[in-house]
Image (cartoon, rainbow, N blue to C red; front, side, top):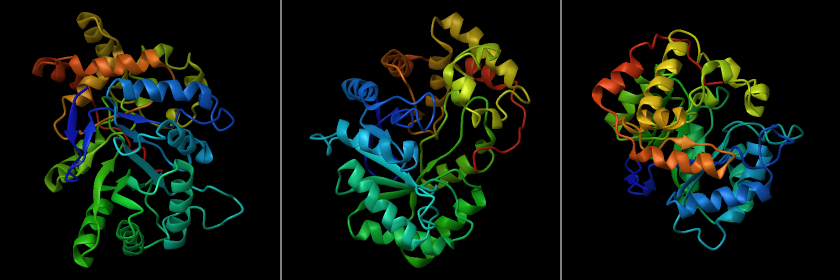
Amino acid sequence: MEYTTLGSTGMEVSRLCLGCMSFGTPKWRDWVLEEEESLPIIERAIDLGINFFDTANMYSVGESERILGTALEGRREENVVATKVFFEMDDANRNSSGLSRKGIEQELNASLDRLGMDTIDLYQTHRWDYNTPIDVTLSALSDAVRREKVRYIGASSMWTHQFAESLHTSEALGIERFVTMQNHYNLLYREEEREMLPLCEKKDIGVIPWSPLARGYLSRPHEESEATTRGKSDTFARKHPYLEGGGRTINERVAEVAADKGVTMAQLSLAWLLHKDWVDAPIIGTTSIEHLEQAVAALDISLSESDMTYLEEPYQPVRVAGHE
């Protein structure tokens, strides 16, 4: 395993972050694993040197956090745990969603209980809240840091002007600022390269991309994409423009280069991200130990400048996706 410093936090994290959306209950999503299937994967990730885990309160409506907390019991301090808040958790509670002070405080306490932890290393806003002023959200998050319930705060997908406003607000008020950006970024979706990633690089923001394999579209030939359980049931993936523009050609080039190098398409796609200087740790999701081990092996793949250019060249601008 390789390690890096996460943005300006000083925390040392593995170059791969294990995303825990796949752990919880299939009652939430068909492709999600139950606890007895999830725990061995988390255990193997730790064995492989992964010390960075990302979840969210809304994943399996809290069950993902509970499973992760169970897996890390007794070895909490040597690992870095990130979770998120924004989406509705209880349709009977109108304040169980969004980024109001009330919503943040009650959902943070619930996440801490499920994780079995006193402090969350990285607490992230899952999306932008158009109903709550950003100074209200940042003040609530800053107070959570002051009360030692949270160590650092981060953000996920939003427009660059919103993220810039957030950073400016923190500076103007002298409160905690977002130190990470969890954004939508992969070979088939590179719109973040226009504004968000240059801003993150300038401000020393840690970048932890979600969907590094484009929800599976970069792990197999495009004609096979819907052959898996997730491919058949993941309607969210079909909302993304992965195969628009030059997506199909990129998919074919990934297959070609992967075959030349004797690696899988998923490994090659991860290697591309790991060669990007502004990326700290892609968030990988998996439902098998085999795929987890293959992802870790991607750290050993070397890509030349010509490889990178060949993979990137067919890309064409696509519609923005992932801020929903």
